[in-house]
Amino acid sequence: METCSRKIHFCYGHRVMNHESKCATLHGHNGNLWIHARPLQGLDEIGRVVDFSVLKEKIGSWVDEHWDHTTILFKDDVDTCKLVEQAPGFKKPFILPTNPTAENMANYLLREICPKLLTEYKIEVFKVTLYETENCFAEAML
Ligand SMILES: [Zn+2]
Image (tube, rainbow, N blue to C red; front, side):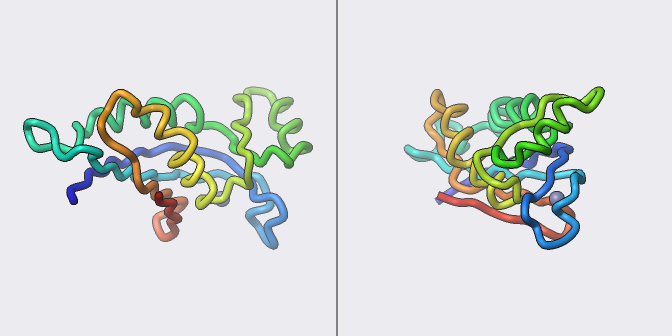
C-alpha cells in the first residue's frame, strides 16, 4: 500500500512528571513530527494519497496554534500548570490527559486530533512519529 508523510517542526516546553532525573525539570525541545497517512479508498485520480500540502495545512496549522511555543503539561501536574499560567509572557499551557512524553504526545495527535482534522479527505493518519531530539523519537500507530 502507498503512504505519504509530511514533516512538521515545532518548539515546545514540557516536563515529565515523576521522571527519575532531569526531564522532571521544565525544559524545551525543537521537535519534529512526521505525519504518515494512507488512503482509505486507493489513490486519487492523479495518483496521490493526498496532496502533501493538506497535511501541512490541516495538521501543521493545528500544531502551530496549539503546541508551537507552548508548554505542554500533564493535567495532574497542577502546581506546574499554575506556575506557567502565572509566568509573565507565557502562553496558556496545553494540558494533556497523560504525561507529555514523546510517546504520549504522538499518540494524542494520532488518536484525538488527526481524525477530527481530516474528515473531508479519504485518508487516515496511521502513524505519528515525534523526534524529541535528532537522536530520539517515539511513534504511535493504529
Ligand atoms: Zn523533554
